[in-house]
Image (cartoon, rainbow, N blue to C red; front, side, top):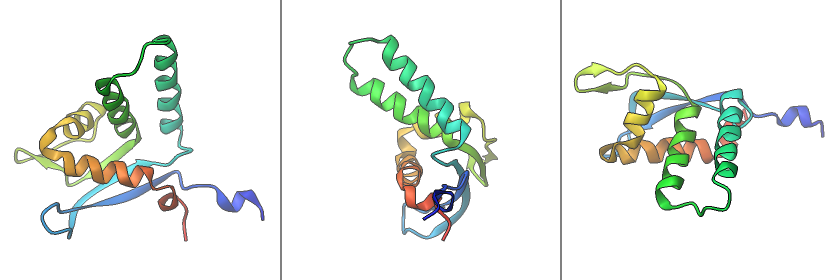
Length: 124
């Protein structure tokens, strides 16, 4: 088999589901794939930060920050994401704000699950 047939998509679109009943919303988040330069650059920064901490043990806060940082780095775009009555532009700062807000744990979980599901990045 030619390995070129097994190259993941550069990005995918994730339709956000309502946490109330699981129905699709009109919110769509575009996530960088595993080989996307944004994802690769984040991994390099995160590993560099780990090495700079040397032998210091990672605590829960550091792991959560790293997990959120990856989601922020992989969020390339979104549509129809409204907060406090206004459409929220997709920026790293806003992604960190949304993913870090405990009220929106369900959104963070959906995005993290999609990002971690490697099969989603391979077209049928």
